[in-house]
Image 1 (cartoon, one colour):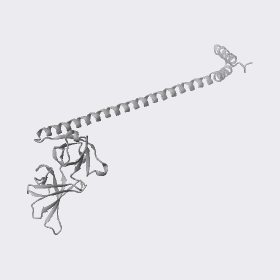
Image 2 (spheres, one colour; image 1 turned 90 degrees about the vertical axis):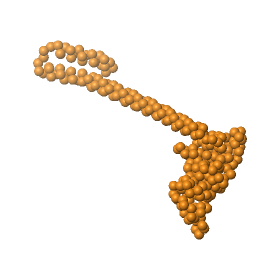
Image 3 (tube, rainbow, N blue to C red; image 1 turned 90 degrees about the horizontal axis):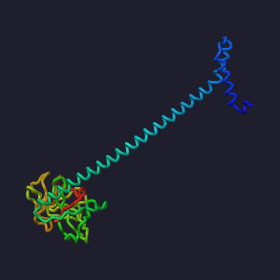
Length: 266
């Protein structure tokens, strides 16, 4: 019967324990009482301790999960703040760039259009680029194209293929580009050749011309497309042309076309 109903057995043990605790007992009965107390109470004490430990462990897990979620939320918030800051910085740079371009356009005496570069073909890095204006904007082939970069203005190429809303620009670094140029202050003329690198070559310079590294190269009045005196680049090296009575110079362009986002068309 007791095995079938443990509640009755537990109640019996508790009643016996209470009766024993209520009376003065000799050492033998005291020892028996202590043993009985240990047998009855100890398992439940351990169970209670185990339950407490499990609850505490559960609370610790919940605190860790909450802390982890807070960290994730803070990381996401920080990422969003950085994204917003970057967008503001981009807008600030773009606004400054457009302001500089418009201010420079106001100072030009010639009529100038501003066009946006919409494509820089990867296989034609130093050959050409595409702009977002064309026939509808009164553009024509063989029009001069300029760039503005870090407070410098200079030639970058000419229009060669004009469609309704877009145009192709032949860069001065293209191998087929040839521009009459003049070295300042010597006043010596030559031909600016593209070689599809980040430098130009100025050929047919008289061998006795007094030129040096750092001299400026500008457009010559011999050009049918570019007005004279527009910056093209700076001489970075000079070499002899074999047995011919000429020398050549390597020229670093004033305007790196691949760095631009907008151009001027005359």
